[in-house]
Length: 227
Ligand code: 6GU
Image (cartoon, rainbow, N blue to C red; front, side, top):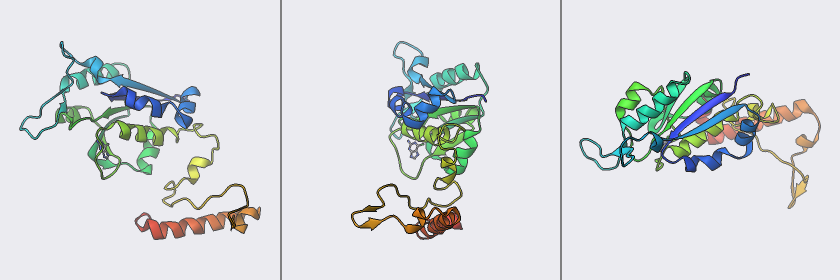
């Protein structure tokens, strides 16, 4: 199987590096399941001052990432391969969810453009971007952390990334239900016992109990998921 490739364009590559070099993501990279490249937008800046941003027309404060370096970086990548998705991380995008993560995890080449400061020039969105994604209704200081979150959610779904093959299938949200309570040793801790059913060895009873717990938790915490 061909690896998934994710190219991330950012003005702060160092902010992304460490979160993408640990745990499941690093293991997936080591196994050759996924290739992640960080592109420093500054390397595509023109002129003596290597400027990547400028003031907005019409005022309003804040800085905006300019067209020319973004376009130069995107065209550099497009010259190498076709992309199944060119994502822009922005609070005015569509809210990210498990369904979108599932879809993106089946892609071969993904480009992520991290918004920064006030964002990027609209013309880059119009010309190149295929997916505008927000990670929730709050404002971050840049799209870098959002890009890490997208990457983490996508990479762990790539077949082979998670050791226990069943594990990703039993996540919260994967079947539109929240995950049931989970326990490990010891059987009793501080006077609190692991539910008997989990010690019963009866697979059918355990599955039934977990589903019942999932339904109950979803009904009280996230009734919107059941609607
Ligand atoms: Cl993708 N970017 C920024 N800057 N803020 C956000 C966001 C993204 N998603 C939620 N808030």
